[in-house]
Image (cartoon, rainbow over all chains, first blue to last red; front, side):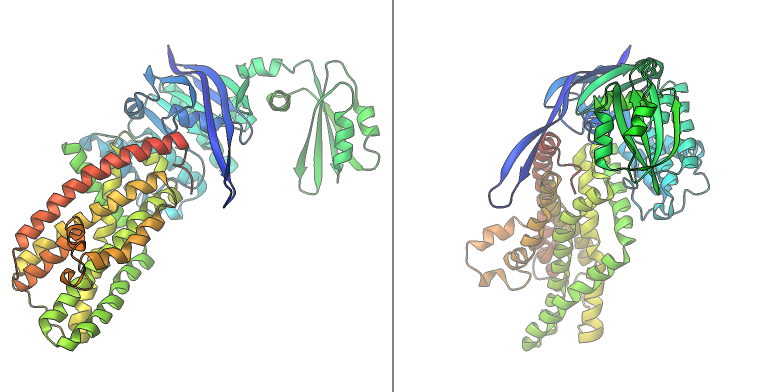
Length: 321
Length: 258
C-alpha cells in the first residue's frame, strides 16, 4: 500500500524585486515530481541546496498549496484534507530553530502534546517514554536555550513523535549536528521503521541516505533525475572510474580544461583546509590519470589515487548532468 | 469544545510564561506606562482632585495594556517566525485560531505588570489614594478588559500570518486608539463621529469598566458585558480573517519568511 503518493507535483514561487518599479517573476521550485512511498518504507529525497526537497516536503505536510499536480498522504488529499493529514503525520526539520528556547523541554513537549491532541491522561507517560527514547530523560527541566544542537534535534524528534504518527517527514534532521550526535540520531531514525512508521527523509549526506534509506529519489533543479535503491543508483556508475588528486591552489582554468577532456564525466573540487581534492569521474574503461596530471602542470600536486565509484559519485553525476 | 477551551487556556499560560521569561520585555512593559502615567498626573494635577488623578492612573494602565497588545500582539506572531515555530503551529491539527488567540491574550495579559506598576507608581510617588468604590467589581473588570483587548490584538495579528511586515500596522494603531477610546482625553471633547468608532473598540469599555468600578459612576457590569460581547465579535471576525490569510500564506509561501 502506498502511504505517500505524489503525481506531477509542481510549485511555483513569485519573486518580486525593486523598490519603486517592482518587477515580479516566477520561479519553478518543483517541476512535476512523481514518486510513491510504501508503508513502513524509509524513503530518501536526496539533492543539493535549492533542489526542491523542502518545498516538496512542505507540500506533502500541507504547509504549502501545490501550484499543480496532486499528492495524497494515507489516501487524503493534501489540499482538501489538510486537517486529517496533520493529525496523522509528524514533521521534524533540522537546525537550531523550532522550539521555545526560554522554556524547558518538558514545557515544549506538553504544549505540543496539546496542539497534537494527545489525550491529557496519556500525555505524561508519552512524554516520559519519548524523553527516554531520545535520551533526554533527566534533562527535561532545563531550558532549551542551554541545549546543544544535537540535544535540540533529539527534542525535535520527540516532538514529532508525540501523537505517535504513522508517517514522519524528516527534513535534514542531522544538519549541523556533530558526528557522534548525528550517528545517534541516525540510529533513532532507523529504529522508527522497525516500529512500522513510514519515513520521508531529505538529506544531502550521501552516507546517511546510503545507510538509512530503502529507496532514494535524487532531485535536482526541481525534477527527480533518478529513483531506486542505493544499490541501483550505485550500479549506474559502477563501470566508470574515479581519479582523486590532491592539489594546492587549483585555478578555475585548470578545472575547465579537465572538464573538456574526452571521457571525463564530472569534475568536482572539495576544499580541505590548505589543499583541495580534485575528484574526476571517468567513462568506463578510460585511463585518464596521466592526461589529468598533464593539465595540472602549473599546480602543486600531492597524492593521486584511483578508486571504485560510490553513491556520492552517482549523485554528483546525476545532479550535474 | 472542551479540548479547544483547554488548548486556549493552556496556550495562554504557556505563552505568558514564555513572555515573562524575557526580563527585558517585562521591565519595558512595567516601566513604559509610568511615563504616560507621569505625564497624565501632571496634566490632571491642575484640577488637584484625587479622583481625577486616580482616573489618570487607570487611563495610563489601559494605555499600557493597549500598547503592549498592539505592539506585542503583532510582534508575537513575528516572534513565532523568528523562533521557527510558526510553521509547526500551522502544521498541527489544532484549529489555528485556537493556537493564535492564546498568543495575543498572553501578550495583553503581560499588561498586568503595567497595571500593578502604574497604580503603585501613582500611590508611592504622587500619593494618589487607591480607594475604589467597588474593589471587588474593579478586580472582576480586569480579566474581561485584558481578554477583550487581547482579542482585538488577535484580529490585528491574523494579518501578520500573511504579511510579515504587518507588525507596522499594529504600531500605527497605538496612538489613534488612545485618543479615540478616551484614554488620554474625554471622548466628549472629540468630534461626534468619533464616538461610534469608540464603541467598537475594547479599550473604551475596559476603561469604562475600571473607572465605573473605581468611582461607582455607572454600571460597571454593563461595561464588562460589552467587553465580553466585543470579545465574541473579535473572535469570530479574527477567525474568519485568519482562515483567509492562512490560505493565502500557504498559497504564497510566506509562512517561513522572516
